[in-house]
Amino acid sequence: MLDVKNLTKTFGGLVAVNRASFSVNPGEILAVIGPNGAGKTTIFNLITGLLTPDEGEISFQGHPLIGLKPHQIARLGISRTFQNLELFRAMTVAENVMVGAYTKGKTGFVRAILRRPGTTAGDRKRYGEALDLLRAVNLADYADEPAESLPFGLQRLLEIARALAAGPKLVLLDEPAAGLNAGESQALVDFLRGLREQNLTFVLVEHDMTTVMDVADRIVVLNFGSVIAAGTPAEIRSNPEVIRAYLGEDET
Ligand SMILES: Nc1ncnc2c1ncn2[C@@H]1O[C@H](COP(=O)(O)OP(=O)(O)OP(=O)(O)O)[C@@H](O)[C@H]1O
Image (cartoon, rainbow, N blue to C red):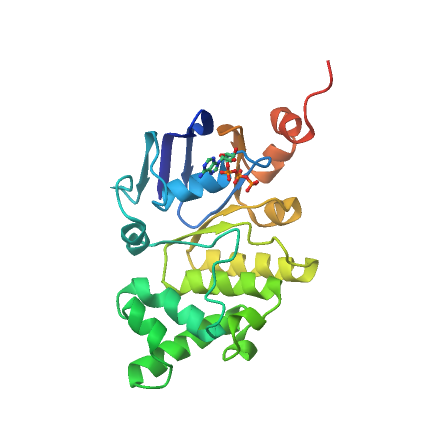
């Protein structure tokens, strides 16, 4: 579904992503892991068009993505969440989800922001759809509260609901479990599994290994921008190079 080939991105002299190649299969949950600074977020930014690679190719369902603008990539069916939440804090929880639906093309972005729910039949429909999504992440009770009033863990779930509102085929989640407590992380895992059953595909960057091992079908491991391993959670857990990257080399 998504093919990344020989992707390279440098910032000045720093090679953030170094000839990275991997594929994402339809209907799977792929986790991208690696130590801090390994290049995970940079790869997300390259896939979603926020950055342009120095070299390499990215294609989504056969469409080359390099050179496309972020909104064009979103329209092809790729949504994402951000490591540092990027919610519209003063807008309500439901409005945040409704804004997420704008890439579907039915509602203009400005209109989605300016119009209050309930004004027209179309607005009521969109509000209803937002509520359905909020129910799925157990946030429906907060629909009319400002997003900023939610505890941090719930804001993360709201960001995921907003990404889903666009009706994507592929969702990139940047550290979805960060700031969640154990119960919230488990709810997230169950939620993602349920969505995978409905044929959604996910790539997630995550530091929380319990969540990764629990939810991922496959794992790609990055170290200093290079892919050092790819495989099932069981294969990755016993891979000596991965263990070295995480635990550091023995002193010599
Ligand atoms: N815009 C930028 N300008 C300069 N250097 C950058 C930029 N973005 C990222 N980097 C550098 O590129 C490297 C990879 O960063 P990236 O954020 O992709 O890593 P990461 O694996 O997502 O890390 P973390 O797990 O800490 O979020 C780091 O050394 C980082 O400092």
